[in-house]
Length: 296
Ligand SMILES: [Fe+2]
Image 1 (tube, rainbow, N blue to C red):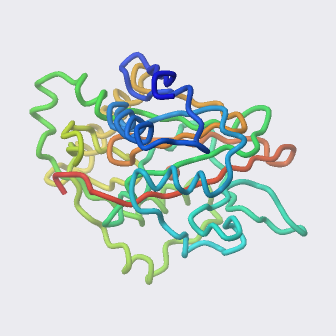
Image 2: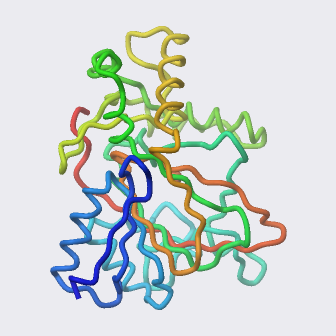
C-alpha cells in the first residue's frame, strides 16, 4: 500500500502537501510514519481528500498521531460528538431548534489570519478539520506557510527581525473582534487575569524540523518589544502582507470527506464567511497539544 501514496505541493513555495492513496480507516505503522514525515516536510499543512467513509474513532486515532488530543472541556457538551469528547462540531447545524455545533461566523475581508491561541502557554500545536457538510459557496479556509515566507525574506530583513519579541494578548484580539462586532462584550476581568499578555518570538524555530518561521498572528500581537506603536504596526503589517502572498498561501474549498491538519507553530489560517441563513456547514475539529516552538 505504501507505494501507492502520492504527494503534491499545494503552493508554489512548497508549503502544504496533498496526500493521495490513503485510507484513514486502515493505516499501517509504515503509512502512519509517512504521514507524520509529510506533515513536517509540508511546512505545516497536509490535505487528504475522500475520507467520507471514516468513523469518529478513525479521526481521533489519526489526529492522535500528531500529539495529545484536547477534550474540549471549555465547550458546551452538546457541541461534542457523542462518546468522542475529542471531537468538536463546528458549524450552524441544529437539533430540536438549538445549535448542536459551535457556530462562529467569519467576517468578510480582510481575512483574519491567525494561529490558534498564541496568547496561551502552552499553545495547542495544531488542529485537524474534517468536513462533514459544506455550503455550495463560501466557508473556505485559507492557510499560509510561515517557514516558506520567512525563508523568502532578504538577509537584511531577517537580520532586523531575528531576535525581536512580540506581545500576544487575548484582550487585543477581543478588541479587534469588538470593532467588527460591537455587541461582543469586553473581556471580563477574570479572563484578563487568566490570560495576561505574554511575550513570544517574532521568528520562531520549529521543535521538530528546526526550520525558522515568522510567528505572526497579527490579530493577537499588540506590540513589538522595544519598538514604538507606529513602528510595530508598520513592521508587522509589512511582514503579514509579504507572508500572505500567493506563493505561500492556499485557499481550501471544502468537500465532504476532506481532512486538513495544520501546524500552529509554522502556519497561519483564516476562515471565510458563508450564507448561514440559506446553507448548512458542519465540520469536526480536533485540537492537538505537544512540543512548543523554540525561542519562547
Ligand atoms: Fe482558528
